[in-house]
Amino acid sequence: MNLVKNVGKVDKTVRIAVGALLVVLAATGTIGVWGWIGLLPLATGFMGTCPAYTVMGISTTDTKA
Image 1 (cartoon, one colour):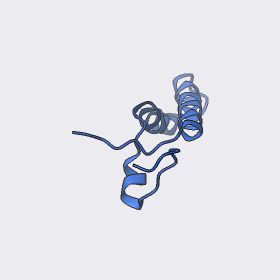
Image 2: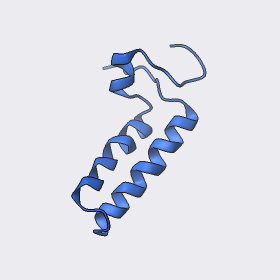
Image 3: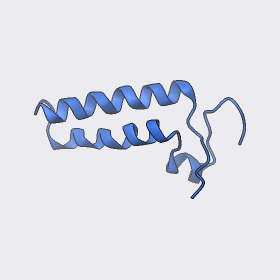
Image 4: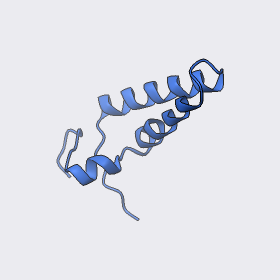
């Protein structure tokens, strides 16, 4: 399956940072089980593609795919 990259550099950095923060806070019990939702932005940040962006026709990359 060939996924189109639609997550740009800044978007990717923010997704990874926020996702990691949420996962760490969940793992330490600071914010509870809902913090594990941080796995989603982490995954989309590392993969460089966001299914929601694909559905909505959004891309934050520098070049149009």
